[in-house]
Image 1: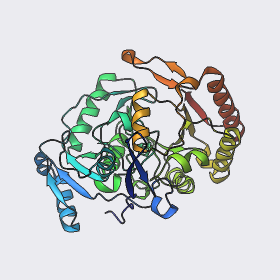
Image 2 (image 1 turned 135 degrees about the vertical axis):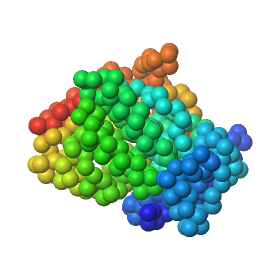
Image 3 (image 1 turned 45 degrees about the horizontal axis):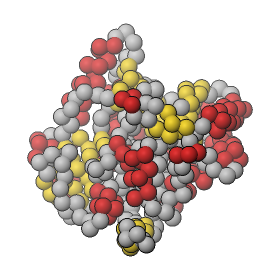
Length: 377
Ligand code: SF4
């Protein structure tokens, strides 16, 4: 049950010299620690009629009705109309405070390289405001938070994928389109999925979070089939670019709890970002991680390293939504990396990418000699 409301940032829209709207978000970038620690409660909830045919859909309807949160119906979770806001930016911010409860119809799981074979679709969207988040473009026009109530059907589909790949192990990533811990108090779907994978000899689950609300998962029967990862970063990045998420201290405390509960633990250090003093910043991050984690937590640890990247579309959306961001996205200082379907992105030029990689690898080996670095990308 939700316990508190993440305070809504104050949005003030003015015009610049060229008469373009400029939005000032007064408290989003200066998230206070206490705000960061609260669980998300929506301002408004939409339901697809079909969702009410499932026990979880009925339960959520009754919960929000009882809490007095405005409820509306929508014909499809993909086309929600009526989110208030006079400007695009206002609508965007209100959408991130809107929950949509629907039925997942597409049962074709996307691929999720390099960390897993498939993305398991438990939810889409996130209430936090990380400036660099790829959801800015991935869910572009639909930033509201969609949760799905037909969990059994989604898990049955996962079982089919596992069967197809026998005798290989099949890994599922649950954080491709949302932060699953950020909404776990709403649906409990992650715990169901963890326990489902716990029973699958050839099924594995992994996800990553920037939230510390892990208590409901500590007694899940995971059977060590779920790798619980936390997204960590240097102070500079957390403070400047990750409003609405849990603090470093909260995440590390949660990581310790998760390790004590016997989960294999991992850290995704992303985005690795080039800022003045980045070497000291990342060394400090790893030293703090090392000093706070027990030997037991360090005994089965993975690191995934992802350098900062952006596309042209992402850049324009980020600048429209977070106009005061300090996020550096200068194409001239980047290398263009071609991707699938001719769509590329801007990454760091080789010299910088190699320096980031070398520094991180050296420090991880120094501080976590037993850990495995899964990839740098
Ligand atoms: Fe995106 Fe994760 Fe930040 Fe949510 S917590 S906005 S999913 S990067």
